Amino acid sequence: MTQSHSPSLAGKTLFITGASRGIGLAIALRAARDGANIAVVAKTDAPDPRLPGTIHSAVEEIQHAGGKAIAIKTDIRHEEQVQAAVDLTVQTFGGIDILVNNASAISLTPTEKTDMKRYDLMHSINTRGTFLCSKLCVQHLRKAENPHILNLSPPLNMEERWFKHHVAYTMAKFGMSMCVLGMAGEFRKDGIAVNALWPRTVIATAAVQNLLGGDESIKASRTPAIVADAAHVILTSPSRSAGSAISTGNFFIDDDVLRSVGVTDFDVYATSPGTPLMPDFFI
Image 1: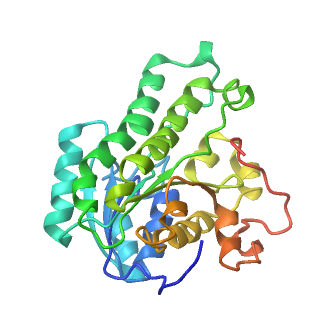
Image 2: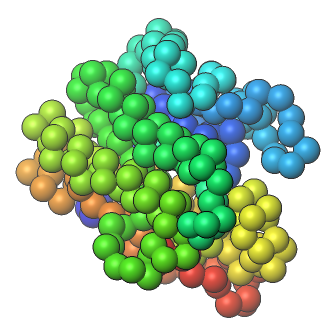
Image 3: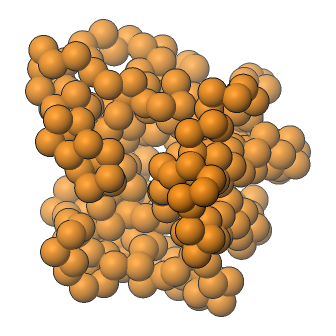
């Protein structure tokens, strides 16, 4: 991935789902340091003792980092709410340059222990929500100078081992990845780059703290900043160029992206330098 231009998101407008905390907020803050505009699209508008951050605290952090932001309470399962969020973003900032489909629900349960309500939640947020946000943003992305859709989803790998422990969750996340595969081809003619990004290791987020092993897993994690820095490289790469064949339809891994632009020190991203890192379960 070449950096043939100034890698900045200054003045760009990003529509980021699940941007109130974790990886979504980290991507927003990295863009804010360039002077980007961020639509913080998430459900949490009041503090929750189990989860850090709200859409309002995210806006404050983004503004403090140098960006502009609006808080838009949105449940991406509902088409009218997503449409209203898209309309407000365009009305406020004049367009949409980048869509980041980050919002996800997770349940690492085997088939018999997967509640159907949870199954429906994962599929309606992960796969359907990604499809819906992409569908409603495309008309605005077509008008952008360097339009991107970035899905936080894993590489497509149709092997039993990725499915057998949590088939419902894998299906829901792979649905996001299938959106990348299909939409990269569908929107190539429009110059819209559609890619996926996934971490090599477990990332220190509320989901890891609450669902995936607590403090021990956090110690073996990298911070969300590594995903944000990798996203920044992708989102500042040209979507329309002679090399556009390699700018879309990719399933990127965070540290591979950073190595491609010369990053060699990954200890800065470790939550506990020296602690062996836990690989992500899709890698």
